[in-house]
Amino acid sequence: MFARISGRYDLLNRVLSLGIDQRWRRRMLEQAGEVRGARVVDLCCGTGDVSLCFARAGARVVGVDFTPEMLAHAEAKRARAGAAGLFATGDALALPIADRSAQVCTVAFGIRNVADRGACLREMRRVLAPGGRVVVLECSMPPGRCFGWLYRTYFTRILPLVGRLVSRHEDAYSYLPRTVLAFPEPPALQRELEQQGFVECGFARLTFGVTCLHWGRVPGR
Ligand SMILES: C[S@@+](CC[C@H](N)C(=O)[O-])C[C@H]1O[C@@H](n2cnc3c(N)ncnc32)[C@H](O)[C@@H]1O
Image (cartoon, rainbow, N blue to C red; front, side, top):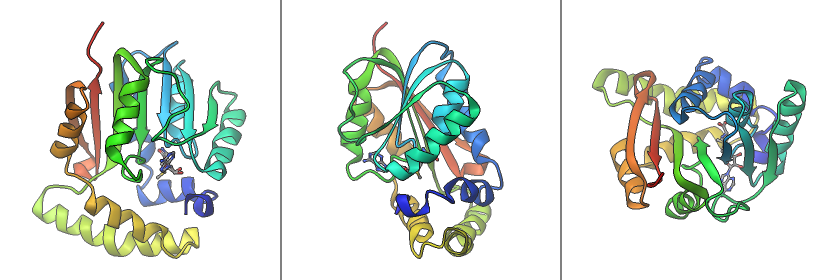
């Protein structure tokens, strides 16, 4: 599915989020703190927007994704921007990265897609050095009654329609609301991070709660 929508993926992100998605990715960078010189592993990096955001801030980034078509766009964008960074094909459930070798591990709009979320969080914990930070960005459903209802209508009816027309993929943008509705609420995802041994975990709902930023730290240092 991601291979087939890769050419239109960035355009759809900008259109469907009304251009706010890049601001959310910059919030990930702020949450990670000082990253100059730090080793950052960006899981499910797709077309590389998070990776490039961190690379521009001076981090040594490795973006990992299992869809080569998405990575080809990431690499083309990296070259155009003259940014540093490396993109590698790999599975978020078995990362091609050494234990305790990264200071920051990120995943944006990816953890919802993996087949085994627990295994993915364990991998993030494994590759992070003591004191390392995890930053997760994911779609969520806004909590308020009135806006919640309005957003649900947009998300389950209008978004799949626009997504289908622009991506020319029958199912990709119906898959999005389906998986978001089945995804844990932010407090439950925070508990999952804590169960994997992350400390100082927290979350912030962004843009009325249509997206949620999660963070945590590996104990030590
Ligand atoms: C919605 S895109 C997110 C891309 C990017 N992080 C962003 O901010 O736009 C989800 C990405 O997760 C990747 N993905 C899903 N499961 C994966 C896995 N187990 N290992 C590696 N990549 C995976 C897909 O190939 C796709 O590129």
